[in-house]
Length: 320
Image 1 (cartoon, rainbow, N blue to C red):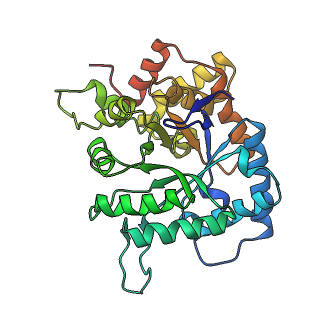
Image 2 (tube, rainbow, N blue to C red):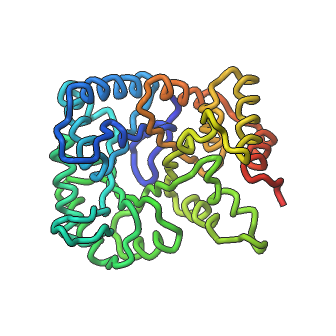
């Protein structure tokens, strides 16, 4: 699989990453199971065989069990840690943490960020993260406090590089002003069906312009890798009972997949890969077969006409 160079680093990362959220689907305090361990081994091996070297986590995924499962996989593969790029996210806190009356919230306080990373490293059974992302914007963020946390984590060797997730251009800019380390990743929801970051870029000064498209431009300007979560749109285009408004996009995806002799998943990911921002899809399927089908995207490139036809089908309107 082709690779990108992670901005501001010497780390090569695969064009497609593997999202580890669904290694466990039990979001509770139960123990990890033998079946989950076996499934994790199959998925990790499949990802590696396809050339994937970036694995994406978050401290909240399955209440930490997804990281525990991956840590188990690492223990049984001596030497693997130094050949992969491991990232995790933190900053989201569940209701009831730490007390019964605590609300669900975001927390970028220094203490929480440092404690979160220490927990992540323990669950993953590693000494360091290649990347730490702030999961969702915290309205109460004090940039100087985040900078203090990042300085500590970087100086101690626990985190090599930093980024954000679900952040807009101005939020990134505000934070970057206070950091010594460059923000190198922004992970956002992006797919053919959730295309606002792309399509808003052609709607400037028109009704419906939200300014969302500026975030992609900002990331390109400042060398920030855009990662796309849910790049297959949750499988909505493959649903048995397809929503009527999705029929044009689903039909065109199927047509292109047949013409290019690849999977429909590959067409959806190729649409993202065709964008000059160098978007890196994070595929989170729990099916080895679907992961293999998705990785076919690396071998194809959509024409400009195919790319715009897909966007028009998804928007339900041609380019203005």
